[in-house]
Amino acid sequence: MLILPAIDLRGGRVVRLTQGDYERMTVYGDDPASTARGFEAAGAAWLHMVDLDGAKDGNPQNRAVIAQVCGGGLKVEVGGGMRSERDVQDTLALGVSRVILGTLALTDFALLKRLVARYGERIAVGVDARDGCVATHGWLRTSDTPAVGFCATLRDAGVRTVIYTDISRDGRLAGANLEVYQALCTLEGLDIVASGGVSTLEDIAALRDLGLYGCILGKALYAGRLDLGAAIAMARSAKEAGAC
Image (tube, rainbow, N blue to C red; front, side, top):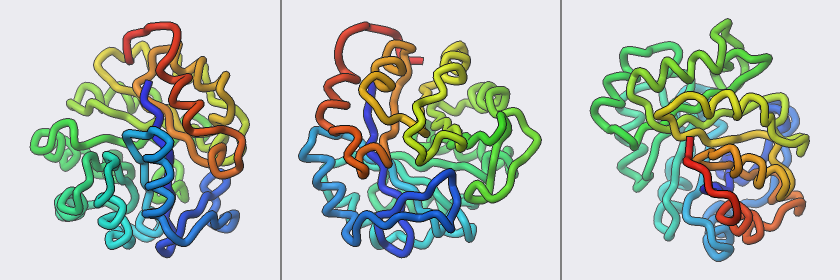
C-alpha cells in the first residue's frame, strides 16, 4: 500500500483544518518545499497536496508553491479549485503527476469524462463524504448523492483512482472508517486511497490488509502521532492483498 503524506496549502503556508472547517486551522510551517523534502528523506515516493484557497474560492491560487514542490523528487498529486479543463492543463504543466478533481466531478460529469478520456490515469477524483453523501466546494456544501454509489459511477466512467475522505474523521485522529473502505474494496477496477482519521500503525495495517491502493497521512504526522518511515514500512509489510 502506498503512503502519501499530505500538505494542505492556504496562503502559501502548510496548514491543517479540522473536519474541513476553515475557522479551525492550524499552521504548521511557512515552507512547503522544505516540508516536502523532509517527507522525501523519510522514504515517501508520493505527495498529496490540496490548495485550500482554491477549493474554497473555485480557482487555483497556490500554483507558485506547487511548482516549487514539484521541482523535488516526489511524485505529486494536487487537488483544490480545479473547475475547468484549463485549470487541469495549467496544473499538470507545473510538473504535477496527477490532478484530483472534486466539485467538478459532481457538477459537470460530462467534462469529467472528457478529461478522463484525454488524460487517463493522470486524473483522479476526490470523493469527500459527510453523513454518507458527497460534499463539494471545499466541503462547504453537501449534496444528496450517496458517496459510495458515486464511486461506482466514477469507475464506470473510466476513473482509475479515487481519494475517499470521511470528513467526520478528518483532522481528529479518530481512526479510519474501515467499514466504508471495506465496502469500497468491492468495486473492482478502482484504486482506492483512504483519507481521514488515520492516526496509528494499526490503522495503516488494517487498511493495508483490506487491499487499499493508498493511504493519506496528515495531522498524525504533524502532531507527532506517527513516524512517516515507520508508516511506510508498515504499509509495505506482511499480508499480501490485491489492491482494490
